[in-house]
Length: 349
Image (cartoon, rainbow, N blue to C red; front, side, top):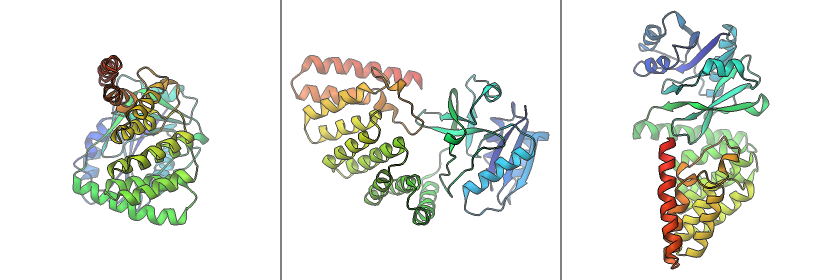
């Protein structure tokens, strides 16, 4: 079974080497997609991957989906049965998992990997020929439901950090691209969600709330819709509009009742309003679907997560709320649970 890695790249001579190094030992081919290289990127790739390095050129068109689909097709043309995507600013960590065996034995068309902090999972491994296509000019998505997906438990990927200026340029570019794309695709919730994220990252909270609410109103994938409500509530908390934040969290729970982070954020907002009884109720609701004493492990999720909210976060609110209510014994118990949950989360990471 032949496995190829695929890497989209422009001028990335300073970082592509470590990206390829993270996979070259176990793949059969390192396919590098040249989207407009004018530095020594290809020389570095050839030095790291040696005879495994194969280059294909794709003129950049401001469309990540088009480039990723080209890479999938090119890997298939090379005879690969599977491909793993590793961008120049990413690193694959097997953490003791045999990725070749995972692909060989998979019945699904896509295998997903968690990011290193385990806050979200992303499509990384694709059976070829691909049974679906990437969509979207940025924050491109692959409809894995068409081919079946599974998230691996041990292997992860990590991304290099960007400077504040590089991040600002990225977010401004994404806002421009996504405003145009949402006008062309006004019924697709995904792009409103990522438009909201880009605006939030630029500090444009009111505009971000509007984008998130458009995503939620379109009632697409329930997890996405609920998380859009969560993001809108985060923005409202930053604006100190805590009552509205609680309402958004409640709407989010109506879209997906298993998202514990929504109840946690509602608990935080209620505490800020000094409604300590409601804060304690929301916190307990969050605990019930968390990962420490709740049933969160049985809630299927592949989208974003807030690990703090799934472990110690609700106990953090509960211990203070109960103390304000005069329940010293309950507050002490919540304090102890907070410490244990924090230890469990940091131990997992």
